[in-house]
Image 1 (tube, rainbow, N blue to C red):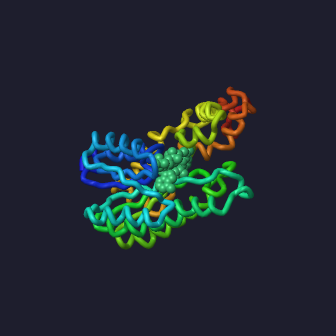
Image 2: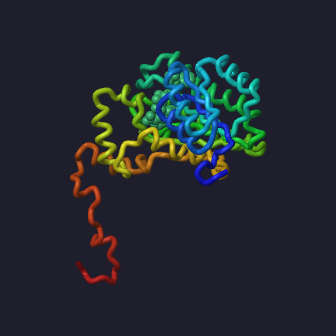
Image 3: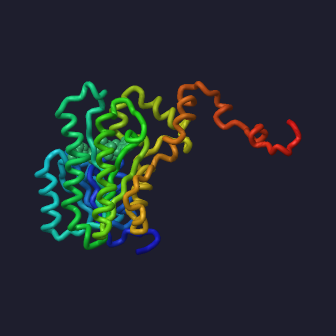
Length: 290
Ligand SMILES: NC(=O)c1ccc[n+]([C@@H]2O[C@H](COP(=O)([O-])OP(=O)(O)OC[C@H]3O[C@@H](n4cnc5c(N)ncnc54)[C@H](OP(=O)(O)O)[C@@H]3O)[C@@H](O)[C@H]2O)c1
């Protein structure tokens, strides 16, 4: 292991690696020395581009088709890995899909599909990955989302599934920890991905401007930004994060109350960072009156 390639000799599986956060995570893990198995559902050519970038950094990466709506597809992927003798150090359960609708408008098939990916087959992936992870004291990393900790319109279904995913992470941490495999959740805030652009349509530019104006880091997170913390929890040294859901939002959620006013121009700019050096509550009772 070297400082610049701390995952040298390791193998990672990243689901939903053809675009967005999954693609950025795959590239980053390969940059850190890991061979990466990039899964995609439909977009083979995008996945191939991600794999090419991974291979530039670390040869041995490849793409695998995986449809997390289909149990057979999950089983078939792990049969292929087992047949090849692929052991794993890291599994990043990143893929997700849902219908963004108010709860009362959801159809049963949308509920089933959302839970199939993020709960039912996340658990199946964990079960099937375990024998490949155990010889290497591997790690399961699950990507959750900010909708489990704060209301986002239209996110109720995905939030419920991700809350289930987070609970599975905590139980895996307790049940697999003694067997040598650890599990961590990562909870990103807003990430400017293609899906977000599609979802927000004409409001996208406004959303980005609001992030740039109000987020504590004064930026809208890119997939590359968000992949930094995902890669950190993949490091062997993150073993004691077992069972944690690591918030990866640059304090965007914590800052919500203050950001709300800023975003809607209810608070003038000069009040965003007021000069409180002479504020009464910071003065000692011994100070002379202002
Ligand atoms: N974007 C955000 O603001 C945000 C915030 C918090 C959390 N997250 C979470 O971060 C993760 C990545 O989000 P993202 O915005 O980067 O995602 P994205 O751009 O929507 O990409 C989704 C990925 O999942 C794959 N996928 C979709 N349906 C699948 C299925 N049935 N089986 C297997 N793979 C499937 C897609 O493959 P194809 O390309 O082949 O279709 C693609 O690689 C998700 O878990 C999301 O909930 C995102």
